[in-house]
Amino acid sequence: MSSSILYHSMLYPKLPHMSNRKSAHLLVRRPSIPQCHTRYSISNRRFNHSTTTFPVPKYSPAPQILIPQFYYPRIRGWCPFMSAPIPRRRLDQGGLLRVVSWNIDSKGVVRAARASFAMGYLEEIFRDASSPLVITLQEVHRESLSAIVKHQWVRENFAVSNMHVARNFSTTIMVSRHIRTDWRFRIPLRGLTDRDLLAVDIPISSPKGNSEHTRRILRLCITHLDLFRDEGRTCQLAQASALLKAPPTRHSEILAGLLRANLNQDCPFFALSRMAGNVDLCDFWDDTTYPPTRILRRPTRNSKGYRKPNVRPAKRIDNFLYTGMIDAGPLLDVQDVTGRAGRLGVGLKTTVRTGEYYFKRRLKLTKREHGSKFPRKSHSDIYQEGGIRKELEVLVSSHGGSAIGIRVR
Image 1 (tube, rainbow, N blue to C red):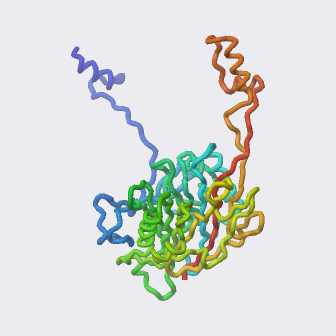
Image 2: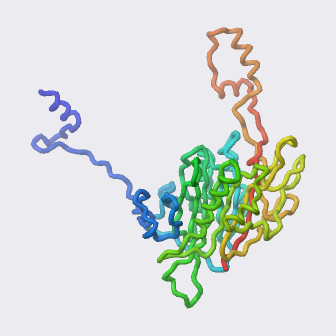
Image 3: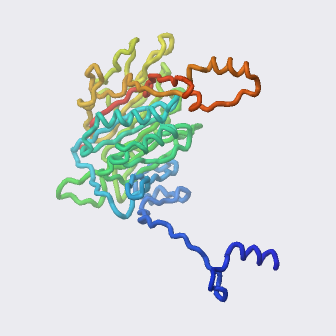
C-alpha cells in the first residue's frame, strides 16, 4: 500500500457495513448566530470623500469605520448590531444628554482592578439608565478595557465603540444602548504621532412637520493630544475642529459638535482660550464656572493634581470644546465631597491586593541555608505557611473626571 493511500485511509476511516460506499466525513455543526447588518462596512482603501454618506472634511485622512459592540446574554458575548434589533431611538431635540469624561490613567499597577472599581463608581452615580448617557474614557489600557467589558452595568446599558486596543492605551466611547448612533469611526491625527480622533454621530429627531431627507446629527469626538509645543497641538485642534464642522452631504448634516480633548497642556506657553479661538471652537468652561479640584493635602486644581510642589503647577487638561447650537452646563447631581458640581473621581481610592508579601527577607535567608537544592514554592504554599498579602490603597486615577449635560437647540 502506497504512503498516500495509507495517509488517506487514516484521515477518512470507513465505518462498519459501508465497505462499498464512499468514506464518511464527520461534520461538526456550528451554533447559528444571526447575521449582522452590513451598513457599516466600507473599504478604507477605496474611501471617496465626494461620495461618502456622512460628513467628513475634504482633505481628511481616510476614516476607520467602527462597528458598535453590544452584549447579548443569549450568546454570552459581545458582538455587532444583529438582525434582531434592540429598540433604539433618536436623541430628542432639546433633550438632555449626559456626557462623562474621565482619564482612567493607563500607568500604574492593577489597571484592571482600578477600571472595574471606576465602573462601579459610575454606576452608583448614574443609576437612572433611562436618561441618555455617553461615557468617554482616555488612556484605556488593554487590561482596563478587558475589565470594563466584563462589568455587568456596562453589559446591560451600553454599546462600546471598540473591543481591542491597538497601542499601549487608547480612547473608548460608550453610548446608552437605547440611543441610536449612525457612524463611529477613527481618524488619525496628522504629524509624527500614532494618536487619533474617535467620533460618533448621534441623529437628532426632527421637529414635527419637517421632512427627514437630510439627517441632522450631533457629532461627539474624543482625542488625547501629544505632549509637544503649541504648533503641533494647534494643528491637531484645527483638524478636530474641521471634523466637527464638516460640510453636509446629501444624507446628513452636523447641527452641533462637542470635542472632549485631553490637551496635555503642561507647557506654560499653552493658552487654551487663544488656541480655541484660533480654531473657531468655544470653551465650555468659559461659559460656566469650572469646578475646581478639592484640596488633597496640598493645593491642587482642575483635573490633574497630586503633584509635588517643585513640579510645574497643575493645570486644566480635560477640556470640552464645542461648536454649533449647544446649551451646556455641569450636572448638578454629580458632586465631589465639597459639593462642587460636575466633578467625579477626585481623590477616589480603592483597596487592592498586590502580589508582594512581607516574607521576602525570610525567604532569602532560607534559600541561603539550603543552597541550590532549595525547592521553589508557589504563592499558595507560602500563604499557607503564614505569608501575608499586602493590601494597599491606590488612586483609581490621577485625573479627575467631568460630567456635563448638553441640549441641542
